[in-house]
Image (cartoon, rainbow, N blue to C red; front, side, top):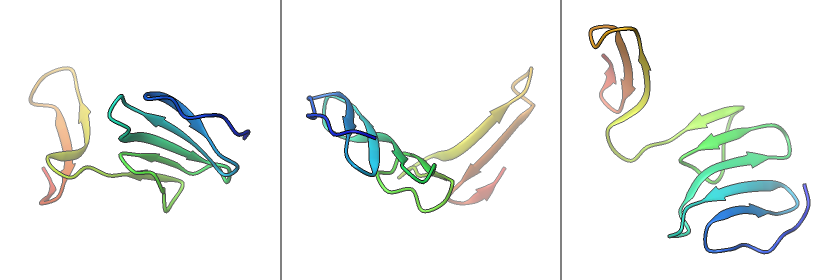
Length: 77
């Protein structure tokens, strides 16, 4: 990974991370040089770290609304 100047939105590169940020500067995704990926975090702790401050963290949708698997702060639904 190289070094680049951060713009108000888009990609930011450092020697160990690549970030995707929105126009407010919030990190949407981070990619570490060890292959770890973070969504909703700027420091992924595992190969895939997904973080969300509210609502579902992870949702799988099937072909109909009744085929939904959610993982959130209160557990699996």
